[in-house]
Amino acid sequence: AQSVTQPDIHITVSEGASLELRCNYSYGATPYLFWYVQSPGQGLQLLLKYFSGDTLVQGIKGFEAEFKRSQSSFNLRKPSVHWSDAAEYFCAVGAPWNYGQNFVFGPGTRLSVLP
Amino acid sequence: NAGVTQTPKFQVLKTGQSMTLQCAQDMNHNSMYWYRQDPGMGLRLIYYSASEGTTDKGEVPNGYNVSRLNKREFSLRLESAAPSQTSVYFCASSEATANYGYTFGSGTRLTVV
Image (tube, rainbow over all chains, first blue to last red; front, side, top):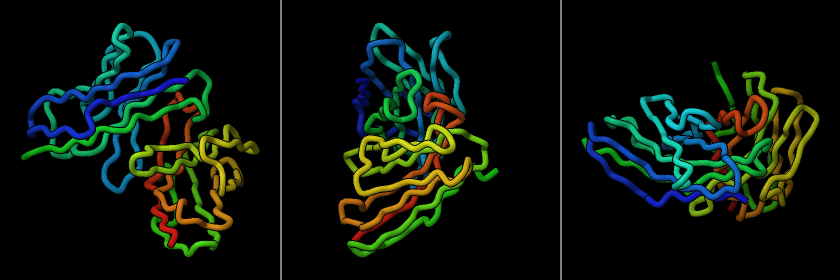
């Protein structure tokens, strides 16, 4: 079974600073990897996903993530954070052909942004 | 462009009462899901429907039933609510498998007293 860890429970950055959120996964084969964002009182929104090919994936809202097989990581980055990026971020991993039963969300990293 | 619509947004139930959470999507997605989100427990799958006419149990199905009414609608029913079912419930849909990416509704905050 797959698993996901997000080592940072809470991160605080200043507006305009760069951001990196860490995600490590455990899965025996090439995983399907995702980052979702959840603003307060809202559902999760898909930022980006990785299946295969180029290991650097571009997403919405200026985010990107890099898949590193050797480190079992899929870290999320943004070069310059905006106050509106304050939210909770979830990394997730899915097995092939799953309808949620083999899809695991990480525990989340809460991002605070200082003005 | 509504996406996934859930009703109600908030609900308070007494122990033993029943209720149905409604969910509808307008993206012509084949698959629909119900998750619950609890502090410290993360997101857990309750039930899913891979296609119209099919439903299957997820990780935490006990105490719940679902109906895939048609391609657009997927409801979640609590027959006899318990305090342990106090949670935030999210409906989601995907074009096909979960690996296509979920579109989530804005959630229903349910409190059972």
